[in-house]
Image 1 (cartoon, rainbow, N blue to C red):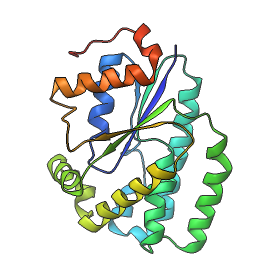
Image 2: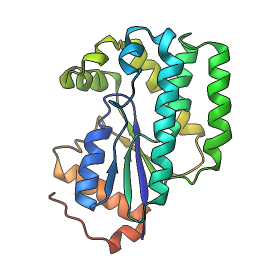
Image 3: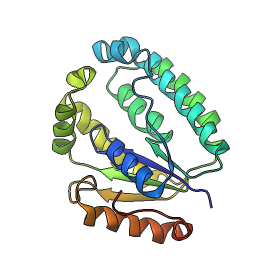
Image 4: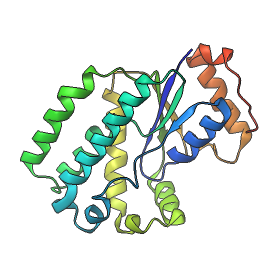
Length: 214
């Protein structure tokens, strides 16, 4: 049985670590966030208003391409960041912070609204809800040079939009995980509990082989 799970959450919430660990334990193919493939990203962090539309459109193109590739796969997939987060979290935040003009926002939204609702959805989205402090701590530890310009207010606004999105999103089920209360990267008890919850939500996983200790 094929499954498609996406991991959602703020910058620094722990999506990539969880996606990699789930991929290893379940034996599913991993689709990682196209972070380093975006040719506008460095310019975007230097001047968000000038490069926001270019950067987010490039991300959208990559996510659309990945989404179609995922749907063609015969094997189960773990995806690091889902296609919905771009428009409904990050682009909306840029618009609200006046980094995106009204014209660019409406153009992006029209493109998103014409394509995404017609796509086959993931079977489940795991939403890693994380505090601003935890996100900022992880961002600092991983030392991605382009992220040094991210300020607290930016992460706070994204967190607010994630909460707003979770309450209204209805295209597929969302499994909320309080990332401040668990350690899914290093604590095997927490990770096993997550796997057990996934088995309840997606019963077909019971028929697949995976290793708790991977």
